[in-house]
Amino acid sequence: MAHVTVKIKECRGNVETMIRRFIKKTKKARIVEQAKERRAHKKPSVAKKEKRIKAARQRKKDEQKRRRAQERRNRKI
Image 1 (cartoon, rainbow, N blue to C red):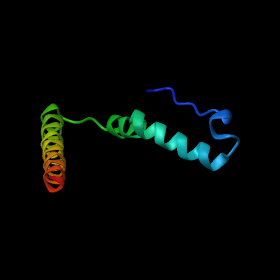
Image 2 (image 1 turned 45 degrees about the horizontal axis):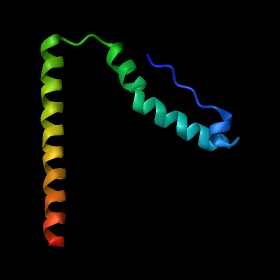
Image 3 (image 1 turned 120 degrees about the vertical axis):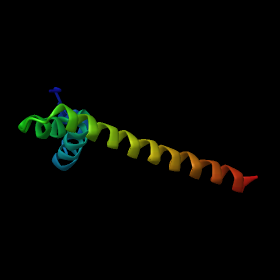
């Protein structure tokens, strides 16, 4: 697991900002997701299938993002 810290100086003493930054850092480090994954054993075949599905979703998302950027560029011309 990652070591996440938020210093008072970063947030100028604002507690709400500290909490928000801490939550962002934990999400970025994927601490909560790792804990959930480690709760129960997953068969290797299920893990591979989930990984494959996640990769396909990411490819689709990236393709849509690329297509939208291309459309925006074409509109400007």
